[in-house]
Structure formats: structure tokens, C-alpha cells
Length: 357
Image (cartoon, rainbow, N blue to C red):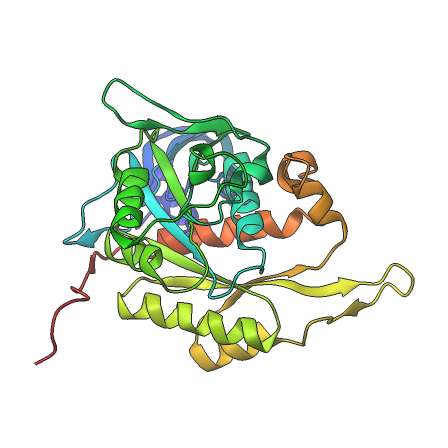
């Protein structure tokens, strides 16, 4: 009788990623009831600590309100994987997230780095591959320029820093040296970065894509099983026009788009304490209304960010509790939820070269 009542109470608790109750999902394991004391294991669809903490509070509160006491709760993170039909999975990688912009200079790499660190600080195993072959900026942002090595299997061994695994073209060439490669060489390098690298059991591999819709972008949308994509833009019309092209590119190859991140969205004046839209007002929101793709975050313009990011110690690492870092943890929460929610149904990947009849 007590077991039935406890399960009724726990059925009011919803998994943060799948948004279904933990009982009907079968996530409540090894339930033990000793009088009013309740102990059980709980499967969670995301690896983020903030989600586990929220679940603990819900379980503890609801059980307490119904005359029980939560004695022991052990979490079993089981990161959901977005699967594709007809795509080769990347070894030791559960999910891949493309972070793209149609235009350069919108802060995409800064967002990629800080999002990766926010996910890692919340308990996820994260890697970043910098696929901006012609203009890699990740090494500068994380203060790391040493060349990567290969293991005995001739796999690239990514650098590890700030609890994240990193790989970039900037680890192979001297700083400032130009890369003059054509399509086939770019395609081969992207293949090696993704499939011939010793990634260590990642929950999320973030792919920092180059701006535009050229050879590298097409290789990245056609080759790996992309779980989802984020589109980064700024409020200016020229950036929004190019961001739309990115939306269309992912749409054509049926990659789910989690949402839009608008960078440099507003500036808070130190004297009047009001928010000002320097580069335009609500551009991303208008695009979201027209396309149906939600705006996940509107990040501020701040004079502090360039100096922090140029120091080699990213914002989320240096000062994770600061107001400037807070939106990245919010974004990490939404990304983990969004990927988990898309994991329940395999995606049939169409051949982009197939002819319509």
C-alpha cells in the first residue's frame, strides 16, 4: 500500500529533459520503503547537476508533504542520444551540437567556449572542436597553443583544459599563419577532427562552425550525425539576414535547431542603470516570430568580455557567479533539455544529393 502511494506522489515529478513524469518513464529504480523512510535510485535524462538538484528538491518536498521522508536518493545520469538513421556515429560521443552563424564577428566562438564551460561545470563531459579552419580563435580564448599529438592508433589526442576537451586547427599551425586549402583538404581535416580523434566519452561535442555556408559547413552538415544546432546572431539587419541563411541550411538537411542566441543584444548604462539597444531592437525576436525558432538567450554587450576572453581564462571559468556568466548557465540548461527532448525519436536523414522526382 505504501509503495503504491509513494509512486503516486513521485508521479508528480517530471524529468527536466523529457518533460514526463519519472514514474511513467520507468526512471524510479530499486524503491525501498521502511515505514515512512523512502530510498530509491533515479535515472535522469541529462547529466547536469542543476537538473539533479531540482529533482531532489521536488522529490523531497512532495514526499514530505505526504507524510514520508526521503532518506536516500541516488542519481543515475543517462544522457539521451539523438540518433540518426543512415549516419555513422562519432566514436565515444553521445551528442553533437553545431554552433553556427551566417556572419563573422558576432561572438560565436566566445559563446561556444563559455557554453562548453557551463555544461562542464554542471557535470557534463564536454568537448569542443574548432572547425573554423581559416580563422581558428579557440586557442586564443582558452590560452592554449601547444601542438596536439597522436596516440598509438594514430588518433588525435585533444587538449584538456578547464575540464573540457579541445581540438582546433590553431593547434597545428603557428599563430598568424594563413591556411590556403581547397575543398577536398578541408573535408579530410574535418573528417579527422571528428572521427579520428580520441574523444573521451563525451555527453556533448560542441562544433564551432566557421561563418557562412561554404565547403566546411556543407561537410559538417552532411557527415556527422548532428543532434541539433544553435544559431548565433547580433541585432543588426546584416547579421540577421545571414543568420537566416544558416537556418535554411540546417533545415535543408533536417538538423533540428534548438534556438537563436542574440549576442550584444543590449547594454546596461552604469549611470542610469537602464538597458539600451545599441545595434537594434529585438531583431532576433522578430526572426523567431517569423521562423518559429525560439530565442534562447539575449546576451549583453559589455566592455569587460573582450578583455576577459583575451586573457586566456574564459568568463565562466574566471567568474562563474558573475551576472555576465549567468546567461551561459541558463543556456546550458536549455541546450541539455532541448537535446534530451529530441532523443525520443530517431531522425531519418535525407541524402542532400538525392534528386527530386
